[in-house]
Amino acid sequence: MLERRVHILLDNAQYRRVEAAARERKTSVAAVIRDAIDHTLSIEPERKRQAADELLAAEPAPVPETVEELKSELRAGRGW
Image (cartoon, rainbow, N blue to C red):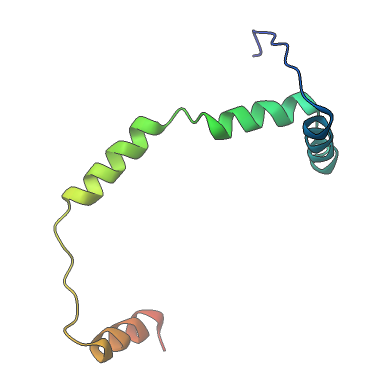
């Protein structure tokens, strides 16, 4: 539910870009701006940081000794 009203000023070029995006998406200018805010100011930085920490803490995966062994593994995994 929308609870806050915000007044912003855009220059003509910015407004034309937002208006074009709204028309393309068949939505309102306000919805495009809300989507841009959600995309730019993600509420998930802590989850992303935690995922990165988990990846960095993971045990190293075994790597084939040669390029040919790697290619063979990739082919086998893809069913070639």
